[in-house]
Length: 355
Picture 1: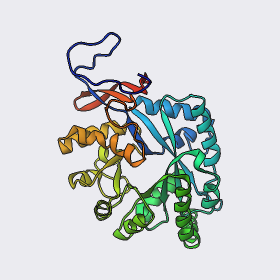
Picture 2: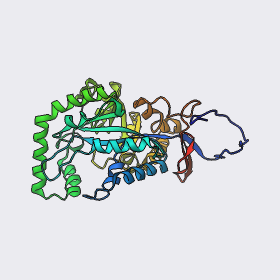
Picture 3: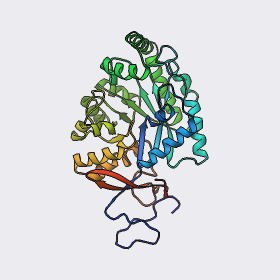
Picture 4: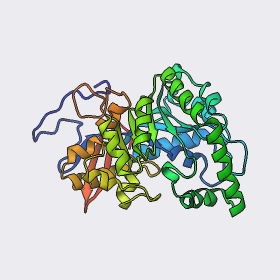
């Protein structure tokens, strides 16, 4: 009724017009806080710039089909104009298109903005100045991809990722590393402090990214970080817990049984009870799969489902969704489990079937 859950009851009778989900699971619509999936639709191959509105609509439909009913679309702010692996500003223009599509009711699911603030860049603060409270930016994540630390402690991991994506030879990659190190030395502290100021101006939740040491977590605490995206070590995850910072890990890490970058396993954090939220990261369909695998690890389905619904909703400040309760949004997912893969059998957003 009016897009919210009107009643929850038990019994064998199926009201007229209702759907019989007997034998299946019904869970809250999943809440995705960090996904690079939109970028994949915008640039399906290196140097291929796909039209943005079709990319947005395709991205939206893909997420709906996987049971995600709320998404914070991650857009990079902080560009690098120099070097072969440069990034040009795109977030403000794409955000305009996304917000216009949302206003025109072109999406199946609920979309919010997530600005990925790249500390190691040339133009971070100039790009962030183009956003304001009216944009309703939900999350700002503080990212520092400087070589030799955090996600890319091992330079060879960075080389495997960037050189392959951008087609660099050894000399070009070495020049890229030196350029990033120089940017961090010149801009790192200024950009980090400025990004926190801008996030507070927007009213956005602040996330850290790839915390590795206790010192990283202490700085995150000082910055007002609410949750940590993909801490890379058990030490950092424990420090987050000790400092009241939620821990998010990637669904592909759970499904694959480990990190593709050689960082801490999400399963290890789950066994240590240091995991609060899951993000699909770069594979939307991994979210529901990882949640049920996590349920098997914990032998607790409600606790695992909360990692993809109630907990991320709370971290982002959303109080109207994330649980099956009367008065909350009727965002629902029907799931049939098959040996032991969860199969999506229906998705509803605000009571309307979207997949």
